[in-house]
Length: 315
Length: 315
Image (cartoon, rainbow over all chains, first blue to last red; front, side, top):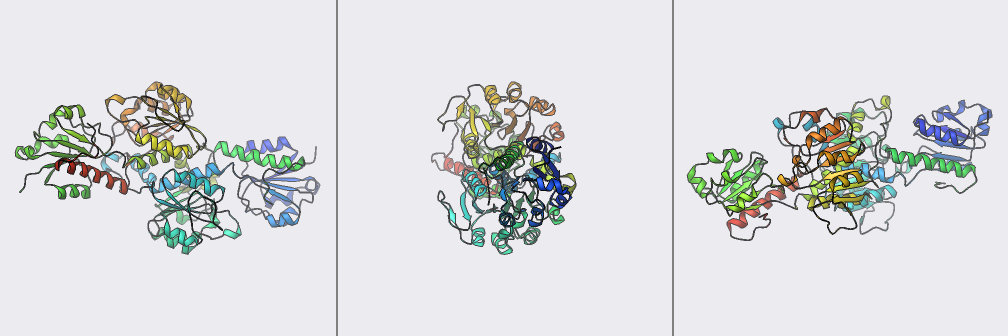
């Protein structure tokens, strides 16, 4: 048997994704970083690439298990689970899968915003109760078109969201580290000022320690009782305790959330809320996009093993 | 007591809407056309305007109850409940409330399309079950951005829908009585050909007898097993039996429906379906839009009673 050059790490890899990787290169598989030390030492020495999927921390200690590791190819645009500084210090390249998922994530952000404003959960329950005739009309809800939205983090995904919402005649405001070239969108240097200026606040930050709790209690409080928060980034970017307090006390209008701090074990307080749309981190979860992500991950592994330029390196 | 000049007809008028109308002009109220003959004859003779809301037929027989009736001001853009030919024959003007609701209806159409494609109902149930960790990832769903949509009926609302979906990088196809000026959208003279050429089919026809069953069994069958139908127009525009058959047998992919043939008493077969998003005819149901509709209805009544040009006459 040939020694594996590729370690596939991630219990969440679909069968076809794993099979595609394992067909491309001699490979071995582990559930995640915790299991990496269980790979026999001879095999570990042969590993030159890791195809990674998941949210468990992949740090320097795990990297040191593989003395000939040259690339960690992440499945997903967010690589906050991987200690990039530790990788760089060891001469290990890290890659991700940007762009191919931006459309899907932006689509879900817009969908959650619309669903929350137009009380679609309530509408669906109204119809499915079988009592529409008896219950009469749904209580009126909130107009989206023509309102004002604030995007927190105007990266690739943030821009896709803004481009879509502009077609709803929405006034686009944003916050990012610095002002950017935009088609006349309004920049706010302070995220709380942004929150106070808009009807809807959409969080599209990168994850990682630099943005932990970035949407703070102060930002949430600035949204006001009609403000609606949409988060499609990472659970870490929002002060989740402050968000839950504000939602429970009606101090903000509602939320559309695809990501949570301890997902998939989310805080049970969320399940009691009616003023939220909850999705199971499925922003990039279409058949088409997941295939594109898997192919881009493999393309990064292949480029490295063949000595070519990495398509989407992050360090 | 002054004789009423305004008849407010519609059990579905909200209290504040009724109050606004009754404050503007001496008025009397009935639940709908069935109750009009119950208005005392002396009052009937005084009535010069009807402010109408509802879906019950308002025909020549009811109009003849009011010998001095000059205008029927409908609340809503769709005036298929009112026999316009009968009104015209009696010299009665009919008005509606176009434009002010197009944004809301288009927003809900886009929201239902996204919700159906991205299996948001399933996602919400997945999270709210409390078993996300045990159940694992949601099954993958369907990418919207970059796909192809067909709009059936490119009037004011159809255009608003197309403009929004264009921002999702969707290829826009459409069918209408004749080809229209568009930014390069693809015209289909035949609705079944349109249905066969697209991933999503959105019905934005006017109601009334001319479009009854326009989205026929043939059109529905042409959509194919992945096709998704969205209807925000009227229940009458779609062959509902054929649609239910196709949904039950999985011959089309799914649907997002805000309107039904016998709403609010919709066919119970709908309630058994999982591949549909169901909304209770709330396309124009935001606080902001309903206020604008009520104000435009009142503006039409006022213009008539003051002898001014009607803002939005349909005959």
